[in-house]
Length: 88
Picture 1 (tube, one colour):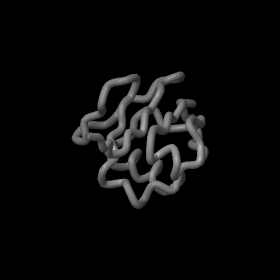
Picture 2 (cartoon, helix red, strand yellow):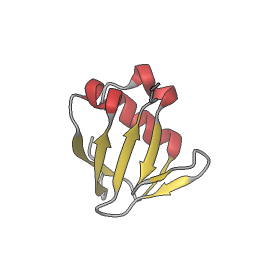
Picture 3 (cartoon, one colour):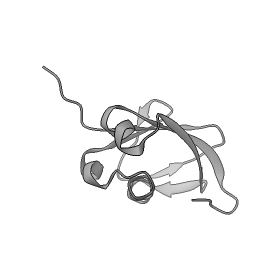
């Protein structure tokens, strides 16, 4: 998906999201400001993550994003897609 006048960012996938997306990382063009839910939906639809969408956390530059605010996007930002983790 290409956004007109968008900003190029790197998407990083971990654990189950990496398996479902079929890649560890990719580059995507995003608007300079985007809502958390809008970004989550865009990533889920475009990278086959609908089955785990409700359990994913998004982090920008290693800081977990708040679901209640718009995310400011700058060139060379990194967005991490963090699925539910399990362990023992």
